[in-house]
Length: 135
Length: 135
Length: 135
Length: 135
Image (cartoon, rainbow over all chains, first blue to last red; front, top):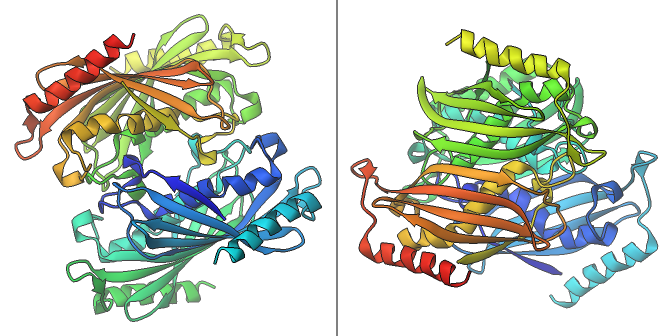
């Protein structure tokens, strides 16, 4: 499991006085970076190998400006060319939002999906297993 | 059905050269504003009556900077206190992304969900019906 | 002079109930796109020829969510390789913010500034002149 | 002097492959939060006492995704009701951008500027002095 800490920013609030819901999409993305690095260690655009297929976000509790947000991310499914990341955002130790994102390993040169290479598959598996072990 | 046109912005691109996926969350939100106005015509924060419960976004095709994006939004379910909005984003007449968002009518004073008032329910129904008629 | 209309977005508000000040930077950028097109008509990243050198923004009046913002942009200085764009943002016909942005025509291959080509210089001059004529 | 570290985010890049220039406005804002806390320690909107008057940003070097950005902020002028914050953003120990922001202490109830209270003025002075001492 990867754990990332997000410090909410003033421009991420909205006129309702809390963090705007669209910001969660960005924060969950930020928290998936350690998994993106399995595929592209330096995050360089020219070497990018992933395409997002789907996100589902459940909004459970308001998030406020003045308090760190902790996002826990774990690989929850590994297919042939795709995988899921399941994530939970906490503020003050309460669950505020959950996200499931589906990513596709993509061959940009040939513009089609491609099997996840074995070495990366192994890293995804270790992350998934570590998550189960910690439950 | 509501149809909104979005002009992609340079800062909405990312290092992959297309529109960043998180931006879709914002655009679908922008396109739901006519429905938010059923509940709060002037969009004033103090009179706001909705809470987002869930979003699902399917990313189907890349979106590029230089071309308008059309988003079609329709009410697809009306419950007692919640409703769904189903949306599709097109660029160059091709489907690029789909979204389903679930909103909850909320009584902020008493901090609990509240039945959708009849006059607003009627507007939601008309939008849902009009969508079916146009299919 | 170029005139662009911006429709404020809910996520662009902040907890003070108005449009967050950082958003102005983006809106002024959006309103300069017709001038960017002088240099790169299709806005394609690989053909991009400009580098931003400096922005100055004066914040004069709060901007609220529910009202279009009109941004007027004019070329206010043309140098050998750089030029300035002066902009004013209005809401309800009142001046809300002013911006001056300095851009540099850049030769990305050789990583140095380059003289503005004559045909583009002519377009910048016409914009500057038209602005003076309309005053 | 306050030093804040920013981790660049993927959605903050643009199609040119670097961090979009508008993002700097947000990062400099984030780095001023310790100074905002002099006025409103918990950053609550209802207790907010500041209005931004002006920003100047000089863009000196491109900023890339994969590397922390350090922002150093110091109070550089204290007036009766206004003050300036001067900031520098570094990546890989090179200066990438500079910002000067002017803020106004504001009495929101009476909608007019107000003298900076003595206890806060003292904190601003200490920050300004500490900055000079460290040079």
